[in-house]
Length: 175
Image 1 (cartoon, one colour):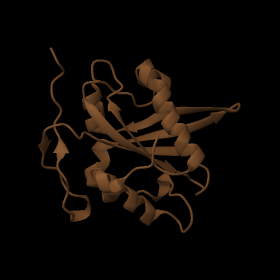
Image 2 (cartoon, rainbow, N blue to C red):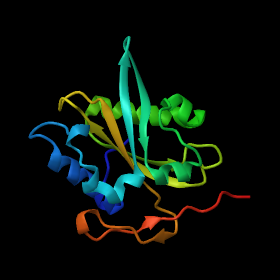
Image 3 (cartoon, rainbow, N blue to C red):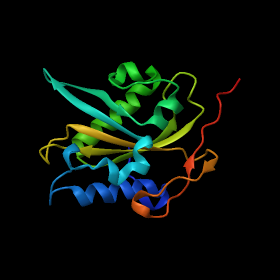
Image 4 (cartoon, rainbow, N blue to C red):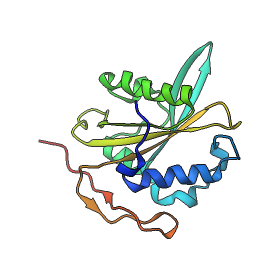
């Protein structure tokens, strides 16, 4: 779990950071209600939204929305599933730790590892987990932006007309 070094990452991560900072109320975290999907449409297929559910002193994470490219790369749809049901068991602790760090620190966390889905861990992915808070204080949702640094690139649309580093095509799984 580390803070993102935006200067070393795909430019889409800095664009999302800047967008979220721009829509957040002064001195507060942005909430889902502040996000205009049209303003970040070029990033939506790389984006996951995760609900933070607090019940009886326990915290669980449920995938609310999965970007279309994410579902394609994972080879399955995980919308509506809880973290423990959505990812391979060997990745659960790492991903859960990243998500908990976002809740505790109230700031973005970066990580890079293989896709945490059956038969997909050969796909190298990096992600930044961004905190969202409806009330500006208490993180109740995570926005996870994903990228594929080692894949063959193809042109991607820019966010709000700005130049963009290419997006990714996904290889077929190994035979």
